[in-house]
Image (cartoon, rainbow, N blue to C red; front, side):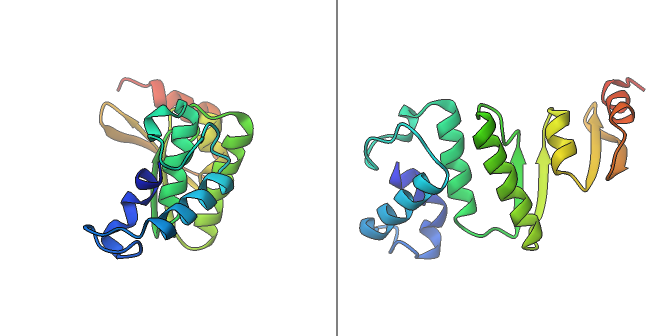
Length: 150
């Protein structure tokens, strides 16, 4: 699990070289992320991430990506598989990234999620943008654009 967490930062040298990883720091950072993001089911940082439930695997991926203080955050269905509390935490992280100056692009079929996060909404249908809305957006107009077949 620690390796899965650190894979996004290996190129930075933060955990040593690709050939000689600094496992002590990697495990410390992974342990902090597991605690910060409330990843459940972690018996050991040496266990495979594949042994986590879908929601906890999602939280681990999100923890990994936010550990790098990204300038661009691109997420697809960030709350899929998460419970209400974890969803609120992820949404708070997305808002904090936006407040810190990061560009945040959320792709989601969950209209409630989109409306709670977006400053601007683009609706895609048939592989193209069919409508754009500024906050606050009209739910019914967005829904109509989502199902339009024009």
